Image (cartoon, rainbow, N blue to C red; front, side, top):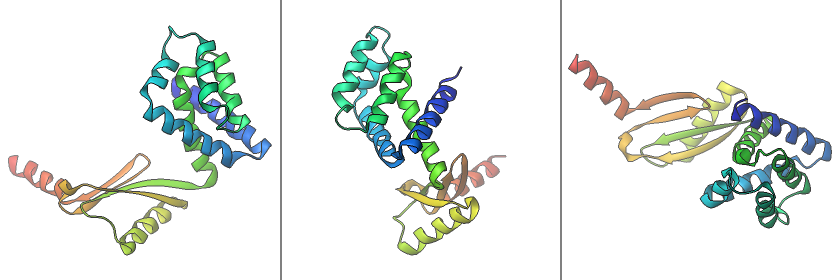
Length: 178
């Protein structure tokens, strides 16, 4: 079974458990915390993925880092996953939980890359475009890339709209080469 499928199942179970215990928001914050710690500390994920490190030691590491910082529901998933010898995919489970949480809450993440920072009017227009297309609340991440020269690149899920001058110039260049 693929890592994505397994992570999705654990994340779905965790959301259902959090709903029953009425701690969905707390577990969401815990998964964000886990993701930030795991991405900032490469050694943690190397230890969790290592076949040499015993499972008891991995659980002790997780306990030392997270036991007092996370909700008991979140910590219980760490224990269950470690008992099932799946601690190497904890980062995937946390990421999948965040994705499923956004779906559960009706939130659509979008990334817009422009050559200059957005002003409030443009930000509102991009929010409206994504909201109209998806019917969800928009969480817009803004990036600035001066190499675009002008225009924008909007990414929503696996769809991308590239309306940048850089891409148009590349298209013209290809046409001239033909």
